[in-house]
Image 1 (cartoon, rainbow, N blue to C red):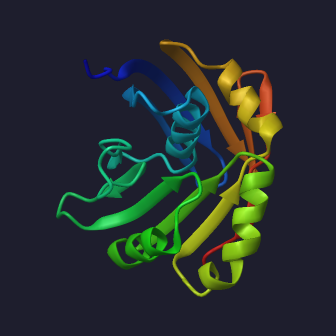
Image 2 (cartoon, rainbow, N blue to C red):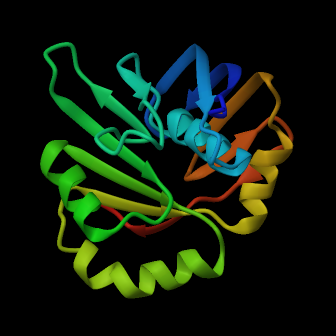
Image 3 (spheres, rainbow, N blue to C red):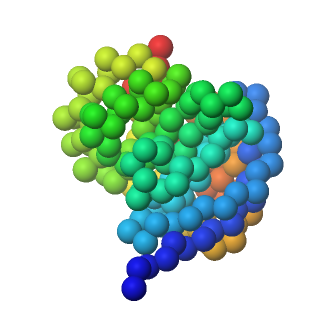
Length: 177
């Protein structure tokens, strides 16, 4: 018997002072059976960092054609492609060629550091790519906030993310020009 996805409901209040973006979002996230709660919460963080009316979650790990989170405008143009994890260069190339902007959010401590060391030279040539890394401590803060039903308030200011009583510092490894 196939395992089913776990469904999460999240009500987000986002105040991104860096981008002058404010909004309330009611979201449904599906956790793939092979996906960790850490990855689910990082996808939610990605949504908060780049929140817009056209931003959506991809169909999940089982569909390689989708981003983890992406913004597709009403005319069908992919404006933003966000991947979470440690994608191979072919996937990054696909994201950069299909979207106006691409973002990778890495996590996992040492494996993330090693991935960046191995791929930095190749990835920095993509002018529409940004790479962000989360520390294991920041990932743990996100996991602590997880629940099947969540009401979360996110404030983003000067590169810091404040989630209720926790602060998260995404590390920018590479920023698009």
